[in-house]
Image 1 (cartoon, protein in one colour):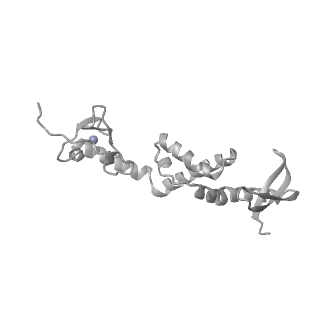
Image 2: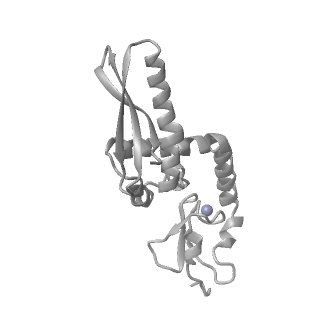
Image 3: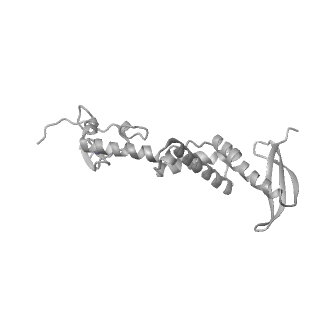
Amino acid sequence: MENKTTGTINPSWLDPNSIKYKPWASISTNGGTRIYCTWCNKDLLIDSLYGATGHLRNPEHVKNQQKWDDEQKSSNLPDLHLNKIKLFEIDLCSILIQLKLPFSSVDPILEFIKKYAHSAIVQNSSLTRKKAAELIKFEIEEKCVQKVQEKLEKTNFSIIIDEVSDISKKKFFAIMVQYFDESEGIVCKLLALKECSL
Ligand SMILES: [Zn+2]
């Protein structure tokens, strides 16, 4: 029998932001005095002196660490990763628009997705209602307007101006255009929304 004093799992080891532990450490099914290494597929006894750090020097683990580092470098090129996060956020905003959901629903929806989706793209997203409004304005709306403008250069259209108000009682002028599209028929698209100062 091994006469070794043991430590217990430190919850901070499982913190998603822990660089030292999180990539490999997970809860052991054999109790809190053990930790499971998903890289080495090993259930480890936590040594009281070193916690779980002793395992970090294990040659097999060092090899796996190297492999993981290399994968991170090739798959997580910072720009590419940021781009993927942005695409995810634009996608999520598009769904909000399609379902006519308010920007404020971004926070609970993202929180829900993060709870179950462990992809680094989802976990690193920092979409908030404010950021969603900006993304819609600068990424989605501008692209849509650009498409409409391109269309208007080639077809006859009529302009419709309407006054609308939002929940904060602010008044806006909605400038819409109506034109004929070969595939969609008669369409009416929003071209701009300007706050009315009157
Ligand atoms: Zn390991």
